[in-house]
Length: 474
Image (cartoon, rainbow, N blue to C red; front, side):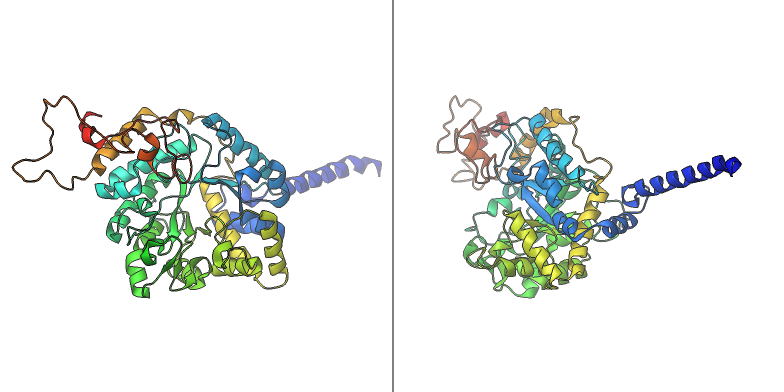
């Protein structure tokens, strides 16, 4: 027996090493494996709690590392104006994102979280970022290549702060100027809005010609389009109201830009607060699952708006159990929530009691994981400091100046063609610029600047003020 002990010991050791190797190797962590194989492998390892955690997006103010670890949270966002510190530097923001990410990476499966922010006209929530004109101005340019450059610049500035997911562009078709968010719409003409979807390859990168229809493609910044569907067509322009229109009108006016976005590889789509013919979009399974996912073959994930499912009922949150069932059942994959423990508890109960089938949960999680895998998050989950110098760079500010010049529209040039107001006489010694916006950076920048509704004053960020009367001199 003694002389066989060493070979047996060697065989035993090899078996142990093989077992350890098998235990540590996971296909979902192997970038050489096909995307579908990685997703299926990871899904097979996940518990219900881990799956529902992936469907949950919470606000940064409550996203501690312990919360991320305990609840397996899939995503975090900065709400409008939510900042880690007043006039926070890019380094401060990167540190915040990485601190949260470390909590996600300490979980059993180490699934990285994704961090999102509204970058509506540049990285607009961030101090010293380049502020570009709003969509209502950019639509006037009729210049999709300029819009693509703006997308590229915005992506660099967002990455400069450690963030990889932006809630933009807004592809609403504003049909009534009384709508308070018309400034977020490129045009009342859906064809112009379709042209402006060129911002998507600017943000995400150009989609290869061999990509399948509807599959998300990301080589740069990851973004989405919003708000699906018909938010710019509400009755009397009332925000979050009802869009009364036939199916043919809905599809011919409000849908085309989404079709363009999907063809260009958009990764996620946000649902609108509004209703269509009395049906809340957050509960509209026919449009979200039936049309967007099934007919248009969209394979990214669908995300709610902030507390969007709460607003399925009136008043909001009146019947939260119904709201969760209706919203998730409609096909929304990731939910922006305030009280995340309530959402997780309610959804867990509904799955365990067969109110919501596990197949619906699996569809949502596969879509979320697909975007994370395509984005390369499993290989590079941590933000770095290599792009901090891109925030507010001179090149981007020059691009913003070009965009402002191209957005200017002369409605009427003087009383008659014989006596035009412009161009101004070169010998003019004084030009009077008056009104509340004449010397107010905040008013000139408008909404979605540092805070969601915008701010007045000249100390909210670092930027140049633009006066149309002397545009040629700036």
